[in-house]
Amino acid sequence: MDNSKYEQIYGLHAVQQVIAMDISRVYELWVQEGRCDAKLQIILTQIQQQGIAIHTVPRKTLDKLTQNGHHQGIVIRCQPRSLETQQTLETCIATLTIPPLLLILDEVQDPHNLGACLRTADAAGVHAVVIPKNRSCGLSGIVRKVASGAADTIPLIPVTNLATTLRWLQQQGVWLVGADSHSQISLFETSLTGPLALVLGSEGTGLRRLTRETCDVLVQIPLLGTVPSLNVSVAAGICLYEAVRQRCGLSHKTRRDDH
Image (cartoon, rainbow, N blue to C red):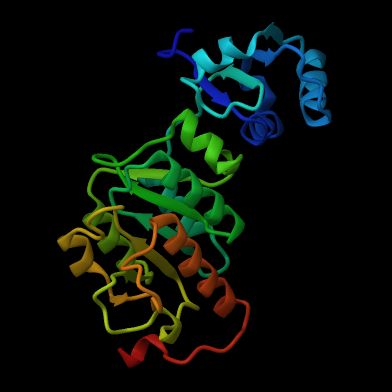
């Protein structure tokens, strides 16, 4: 498989999303012999109708192709999507008719965490996810599998200088709310209703100093047990859905101009 020219995607939901968005990207498909479940058959019918090559192979072949990933009996090789850029973010902000909701991930390096964040971001109606180009996980087969199709529905925008992008967002009127376990301000007492970017840090060290200092406010998720911190994808889900709750018109306690 020529990985320099094609992108490999596996897992039922991830493959379904590629086919739904642009089946012309798909070059060929590998399917596990003996698999006959209904979802897989629907995919195979769509692929056959387009005259795309289908290879029926043993499970061990798919295990090798995906480096023992959870492929669910299906792998496709397709043309890669064009990478998103800072211009994508600028266009997104300029064309929205509602207050933007963004997720910023500062040096998240675990592909499972990034995939889970993308899936939750899509479910919460996030308009874009922003990551730094360096020292961050990018799109991969694992990310796409865990994202369950969200990697093809929500823009993932790598930027060269995250602090510069954060300051640009502030200039556009976007309120930057960073998650920091040392903050004395509760997430649940903070207004998340206007133009908003939720900023979360890496799995081990949290937000970098400059990122933390650039945020307009730092908040903490109250932890009532003995565990000192949350997985970043879990924290992202909590933060995003508190924003969703507030933006759906439910009450909140503290307005941003109180800080």
